[in-house]
Amino acid sequence: MKQHSPPYRKNFQWISKMNRKFEILLKNAGEGNYAIPSFNIYNLEGATAVIKAAEELKSPVILQILPTALETGGAPLVQMCLEIVKRSKVPATVHLDHCSDPDIIFTAMAWGINSIMVDGSGMSCEENLQFTREMTLKIKAAGGSVEAELGKMTGEEDGQTLSSQEELMTDPDKAADFVDQTGISALAVCIGNIHGKYKNPPVLDFKRLKEIRKRVSVPLVLHGTSGLPEEMIQMAMDAGISKFNVNTELRSIYLKTMASCFSSDPGVELVTIMKKSITAMKEAAKDKIRLFRSIDKA
Ligand SMILES: [Zn+2]
Image: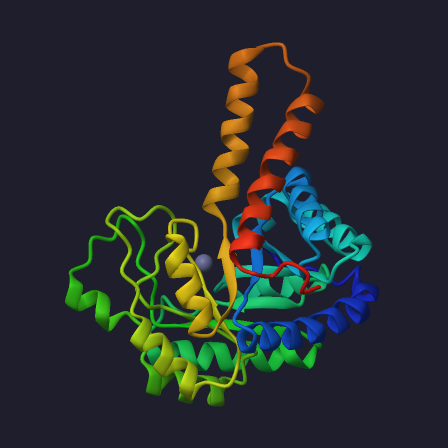
């Protein structure tokens, strides 16, 4: 993806203001033992469902876009999300999820996103620090905020041994240094959480999370929330997690709804699928908002 000129720069002011607000909302969440949901968005149905859920339960909410979705949907996808959060009755913002490509980061910013997850977790510790620091300087200079990850989340297919898994987890001492030296606004932690479905029952290192919380001043984020049992979510909030990322669950509900519409009526109207999938995803998002205790926190 090539870097684009900023045709939507006029969006920067209100969205920058909103991101400042979210920095405070995330801090409040961490102190109040609740968390703000951040849902991955691919299209109009997803964005509509998530905002409706947040409005009905009066929760702040984040719409996050992965680089692959950004490349597929382009500027119109970003514009749609910005328009939806602008009209929202609750605080809402748009965030670029997991991005390690400066070109995509700057393109997303030119299109009006300025809450960015700078993801250097695939690099060595030193490279991650340097990359995150450089990107953070630029993003903050444009009025944006930055989430970054220290350690590396393992995927469901990675098949790491237990000892190598521990080496990939966030080191509490290094986390404090990383935050100080990069100037990031939020830190994504690796404490045994993984993206996608958990093959074995999840084991999260809460002792490590509490140590990170003690040493780090910025809000903490947990990715890979979809497969975690409720009591782990509660424990994570009590240990100081301010934001949960949710992708797999809403996406699979969307796909299941479409499949069942087709199997019960091959001639089904497209708007019927849209309406049904919005309702199904909205209910799933509401369940998450309740679980994250962010009802009435807008
Ligand atoms: Zn993630």
